[in-house]
Every structure is written in C-alpha cells, then in structure tokens.
Length: 213
Length: 213
DNA sequence: GAGTAAAGTGAGCGAATGCTCGCCTTCTAC
DNA sequence: GTAGAAGGCGAGCATTCGCTCACTTTACTC
Image (cartoon, rainbow over all chains, first blue to last red; front, side, top):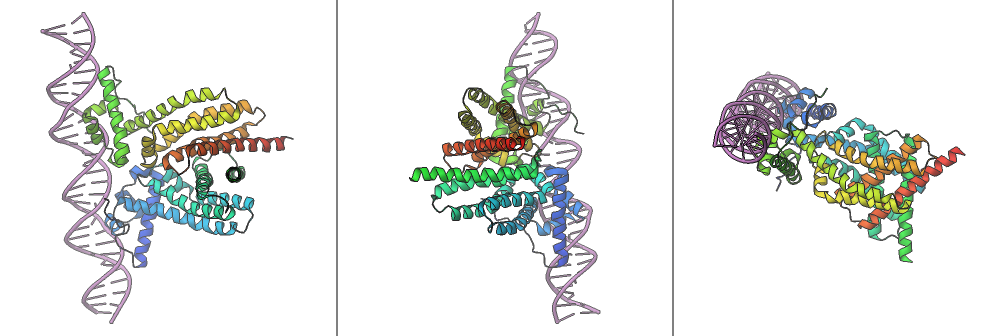
C-alpha cells in the first residue's frame, strides 16, 4: 500500500553537504526537544539549521523521513555506547554481568536523556513505536542469546517468555527511570533491577524443572 | 503560561446534546484507532460522528480538548473496572491479593485494548504522557497505601523506592503486554509478574532490615 | 401556539504547512 | 580557466486544517 519512500532523496557526496545534513538533523532534534512535535515544522527546522527549505528536501523525502532520521541517530548512538559494554559483560559471572548490562543500558539512555524525553513524552506520531522497538531489538538479541547459552535445558517457548520479561525489565524500567527521574538513588535502582532479573530467571528455570521432572 | 482552556465550551443540558457529545467522543476514538493521530482532524471526526464541525466546537474548546476527552474517558473506564477488584483484593492474603491486582490491571487494560494501542502507539502529542500518568496515579495510591500498611517498619524513602518499582511492574508490564501481545500465556504472565512483585518487596524489606540492625 | 433558549448547521475564512522549482553559487576535474 | 555537476536558495503554490458565525431547527415553558 505505502509506496517506497526513500529516506534520503540524494546521497551527499561532498563534505559540505554531509555537514548540511548533520546540521539539519541536529536542528530537528533541538526543535523537538525545545518546542515539541507540533512546532517542529520543516520550515522551522530549516530556519533553525540556517538552511533553506529546499536544501532540506534535497536530503529528506518528506517531514517524516527527517524525524525518522532523528530517532535513527538516537538508536545508533545508543547502540554505539551499549555494544562495548555488552562485550565486556560476557567475561563476567552471571550476577556481575546482569548488573553491568543494566548499568550500561541506563548509562546509554542517560547519555541522550533530553532527546529521549522529547521522543517519548512529546510524542512523535505513528513512528514512536519504532524507537522503542529498535532499542528493544538490540537488547532482545543479546538477552536471548545469553539466556539460550546459559540455560540449554529450557524449551523454546520458555526462552521466549523469559526473554520478553527480562527485556522489559532491563529496558523498560531503565527507560522509565530516565524519563521520570524518580527519587531513587541510581545504584539502588540498578541493584533492584538486577535482582529482579536474576529472580525471574531463577523462577522460570525452577518452574520448567518442576514440569520436566 | 498556558491560559485557562475550558475543556467544555458549553455544558450539555438536554439528553439530545449529551448523546451528541458521546457520539463525538466515540467518533474521535474510532478515527484515532483506525487512521491515527495525524488523520484525526476535527472535520473528519465531525463527519465520522455525523455532526457538523460547528456542533463539535460547541462542546470542545479546541482539538486538544477533544482528544483529551478521549483519554479521560479511557482512564475513567479503566478506573471503573479496576476499583472494585482492588476492593475485593484487600480481603485476600498477600500472595493472592498481588495476583488478583495484576490480573485486574491486565483485564482493565484488555477491555480497551484497541484504543490503548492507538493511544500508546499512534502517538497523540504532548498529551500522551498524561494517559500513563493518570493510570499510574490510580495504581500508585493503592500500592503505596497497601505497602505502607503491611510494612510499617519501612522508612518513607524506602517506601517511595519500593512503590515506584512495584507500580512499574504492576502497570508498565501489563500495559506492554497488552500493546505488544507477546507469545506468553496470560496466566503464566500474571504469575510471573506477581512473583516479581513479591520478590522485590521481600528484597527491599530484607535490605532495610539489614541496615536497621 | 407564541416566545425563548438550546442545539445544530455548513460554507468558508485566515493561517499555517509541506513541498517545489527556477535560479544562483560552490566545488571538482581536466 | 572553464565546463559541468553538486549543493544551496527562497518566494510562493497548493492544500489542509482549525475554527467561526450567521442562520435554521428542535425542545421547553407558559
């Protein structure tokens, strides 16, 4: 139904134009943070970037493509910071690794807290789901892989069930923590979430063992 | 900063007009579900309701006031269904009560699943935060009260910390469950969340006890 | 059934927005 | 130095949308 919409209308070839694209995405993020989604019109973003509307449309097919680029960059930066931490965590024991991962997710979200708040609370449209989905995919792959390795005895169904809840714990809770900023010390929160994850894994493993025997 | 914006421009006095208001809110919810936020223009909603734009503006000050009425009705219906269940849960023991509450929250959300999905995923604007905040407030009051009664030994700080996480577990997880519809049997999910809540409460209580002694 | 208030109508205004296009400027290759 | 491509410009077009207002219809009161 929806025709193929190119995110980019033209691929920048000179440094000059690459900088222009950066400036536009920067400006879009800034306007989104400051003034919200409604006010983030293409003309306004172009003005904020010090660029003409025509230039904007040389690189972005339409308004949505531009806003999508903002969330894409958010996700890229999130991943960029998270992946090394995940790699490091592999060498730790289960308890330490769990804590490290929670901490890393939280840190990666905190890095871009203002934009995150804007994206979550100031409501981009049909595309907001894409943001959380994109973040979740990254974490899901890792969590599923780790759990599958550590608990080869679990059935695929149990693994799915386990993974979904663990990802929610390891991702939704930190996300809400950053957005809401509740009066809970950071370390206490990380410890709480890590304990929840470990308790849940142990619980489901015990359940499955009870069924199997 | 924001001037006082009356949600209602005129209070309906005849049955006829009360029905009109209902039809408008119904239509708004329907368009939101079917076509998303962008397409939910006032003219479109009026047409869907079989009503003229003028009539719409007799009862709603502006577009946002109308969309706010949609989420307000969602929250009202949610509460309407949840409160009796909470009252019933008071008479049960801790484990049963926890399970009952999780189940009740889930059921109340499932009741309006399509609209919930639209409100969460199809992104109303700066007001989406209000939806989750409104829901959360209802649950928070209950959770805080219950925990305070059961654990008088806890410090106010510990209670806050406990309440925030428990509310996230009891509300965010079910909400995501309804929106995402993951491949997890309902009863297993409810049991998992209940166990998580109980484990977390026990954990924090143990922590505090260790500090106090 | 006359008078009045409430409810409802819908053509259309003013403003804003997304986006275009003809034109100019800068860069690159030779 | 120059041709041609890439990049940039911005006035303005087409469209849409929120909202109004002069008017009609319906309901209530006595």
